[in-house]
Image (cartoon, rainbow, N blue to C red):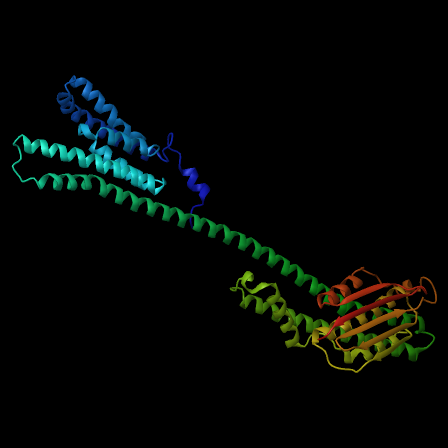
Length: 436
């Protein structure tokens, strides 16, 4: 794990402009050494200049102490070092000042200008000192030694600290850039993790909704027919025993069909849970919600869950057996559709018939199915019930989720769903599902 920019800034708690107390102590130590050096060199400078030695010592001490501000004002340190070069003072201050200047964020032209000034100052002073030494007889080497010594001395005191400072500054900027990138990547990873969690929560919610919708479609219609047949069985049990036996057989068939569909759905849910555990190592953000939905559809197709349009006549026949007057009309050329489309069309008709049993018992119902070029359309329309309140005779509850579930199914496939009362007092459910 990398530390963020805020944590790095929090660690910088040194005094004044220093990032840390350790840096401040190091600069004060350098300044003290430089002050001692300049003060010692001030003795010779005072004697050559003909001023009191104490003045030369104080001047050297003050000049050397400027090194303490090298991090905040490196230009000032280099300028002071250049100014005292003729007095042969501040060698340490010159080296450290040039290094700090080259390692700073200042423009390269400023660094080059000050380094050139320092180089020329050292070159001239060294040239003059070596010439004076040869004139006084202390050096008996040839004249070629004067420029050579001046050039070597000036380059030796200028080039190494500048080059080292440039290298350290570049490396420091590189490390800062890498740290910023690491911080940015960490923030992006956190954001991706949050988005992945949101997508996972959304996918779980969608899956819960889908399961609830399937359970509603499977159970509601079968149980509604069972309740209707049970009510009819109770009414004719004493008057017509043979009809009561037929109704009881129908109730048993309905119950077995409901149990069969529930077993199939539970089997799919169990196998889907095993697949989810096997794929738990795959990040949800990389797979995506679309891939998860595709995998869910693949599981459905593999286990053969859900009815098809071929069973539509049987569905209408069950409602007719329960006492509903219902007719089915099919238009266009019958063809096979994708499993998801056929299942949705079947569920829409099934739920619409269930609503007729609940809210308009005894009403005549028309079921229309149209096969078109690039779509399939279905419509379930019931006339007004013969007696107001007859829907409550069977005691069928309503959760109010049937129409919502139908619309969700149709819209998920890119279709259009419309429902509402008719002018005659009945109710109509229409849906159109595209089929490439």
